[in-house]
Length: 391
Image (cartoon, rainbow, N blue to C red; front, side, top):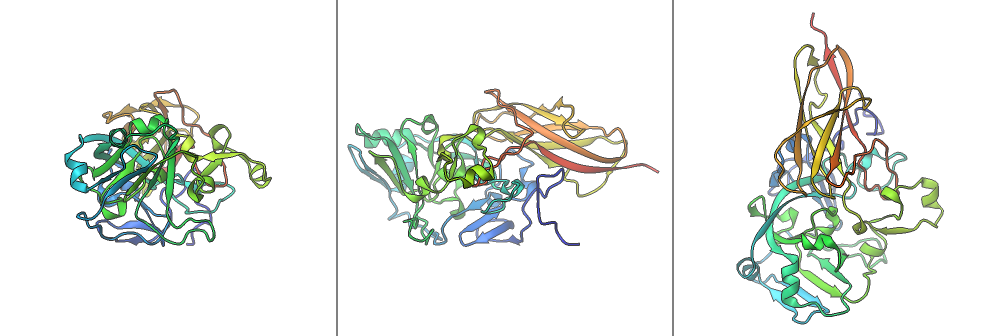
């Protein structure tokens, strides 16, 4: 039977994108969307635990010339630009001379769940697996900045890693550079991380160090971080001025007509935090459920705006809701496991749903978002299930 041409947002879309499994160094078999640059999606079962295994963590590169080895004896982290004391820190200096701190934080691709958009938009057609949660250990970014000394007039910090390659022609896009305002509160939680779940970072997730910006989308979590620059003017490179822009509207929402008008005002996606989301991981609808028995429904929830404080479950396609049980809180930026025991009242097809609320009172909406970049999707997730009658 052929696959349908659209993977969402109906009641039972494919949870992951429909792509082949492939194996890369230091990785379990993951779902490959593209290989230049590499984009690998994490399969659904790896989200049954609050921390995503390093070997199962998703991979997203924009350019195709990526390092497959880094010589730590010569590698340096450079802090330069509008600073009092430019620094070139070796890996050992970074580890030994600065206090190590850890944070649990979700890294999510800006385009996670892009395949749900209608009308369809260009770009990698992620299912829900363009995300992962890890315990990151490293040095506070603010401590490094203090060591270098920010000069007055610094307005933004620019971050760049080692990956290279031909980007869009004529755009000067052969290196990914992302910037955040020096005053952005997210930088207070940011780390230059050298451990991921208490192990060195896999090469495909940014070895030897990557920027970790809890609450922000993964495009700001620069892999193989090598340059931090203090800028005195707003960054206008391609990856800021053209790529990863969202409508300057509530929830980044617009219409195809408005987007085509040429008058739509946009801002960098760095201006927002990840919206509140929740997911059903099991049951996955792959087999019929026997009637009369309890069903364990489990999933994850998170928000870029702080801790998830409530998750609700619906057995009737979102018409009514009951509160689910929350597992341990690993911090305001982490996945949180939720669970509910459901006892189907009848045989037949059921559509279950889940929604989350965060500490700031943001409730996951049951309405789609649309923008030309395919960003910020957080509609209530559903799963169709079949309950069989006992004979």
